Amino acid sequence: MIEVEGLTKRYGEFTAVDHIDFTAGAGEIVGLLGANGAGKTTTMRMLTGFMPPTDGRAEISGHDVVMDSMAARRCVGYLPERVPVYPDMTVGDYVRYWAALRGAKAPRAQTDAALKKVNLYDRRNTLIRKLSKGMRQRLGLAQAVVHNPPVIILDEPTIGIDPQQVIEVRESVRALGKDHTVLFSTHILSEAEQVCDRVLILHQGRIVASGSPAQLRERLQAGGGVYVEIGKAARADAERLLRGVPGVKMVKRDGMGFALTAEGSADEDLRTRISERVSAAGYPLLEMRAKGGSLEAVYLQIVGESQADDAREVTGS
Image 1 (cartoon, rainbow, N blue to C red):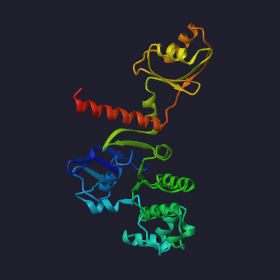
Image 2: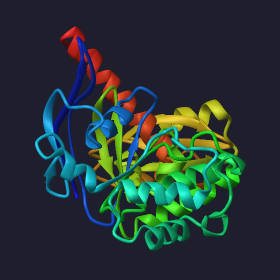
Image 3: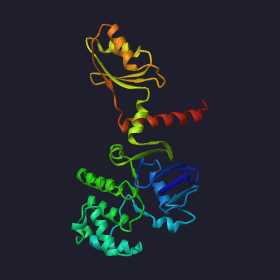
């Protein structure tokens, strides 16, 4: 549904999007995750035909976004970060207006179907000015899907709304993923984990990691992330003991215990070594378990690795 190859956008000497490659298949919700300024919105604007790329190519449902722009746009429903609405129109009239602009064959029926998808059908006769911001976001989703496009592109649809409305918008997005390919941008880590099937992490215009949230967590835990709590040992003694275990890369204090990260190429299960070393020292091992990493931890680690790589390129070391 979406194919991107070497997509690049430069403004003078500044590169906003730097030779990114990715695909998104039918019925898949793909998240663009990154801090403000990472290149998420610029990427979406190129895919929707709002701006041309400097280099590279992108296709929507087989249509090149530059060479076959109008056909590509017909295959996309787009919700920008700020929803463009006419406050004196009713909800139903606004979505029917968009249906007509999109060339819908049955505007009224398609409007009703779109409003039902986003749980706004009972508000179809309400003036837009009376809607909460969360409802306006769902109205924006309705206009994006009214022509039943195969691809839906959503730019931070939950920004600036209250927690209950965030939940409602996320549920609407998940429901859309059943029938459409959804590209969904966010800088909220928990949101990407809850909504997306696959995540692309952008940093300074480049994709620095991709995969499902579970796969990215596994990357963080490669080599064995372990939580350990030792009894009858002074904090400093316990930390020193754990740092001396072969294969331990890092020891960090975590609550009453310690979080350990193993070397990526450890040949032996790290937990066995820890157990043997603690027992030999005469301390009781109160707790030891695999430590799951959050997507936030994954993001911070991956971005940190990317920044370190950039620094090495600059210094030539």
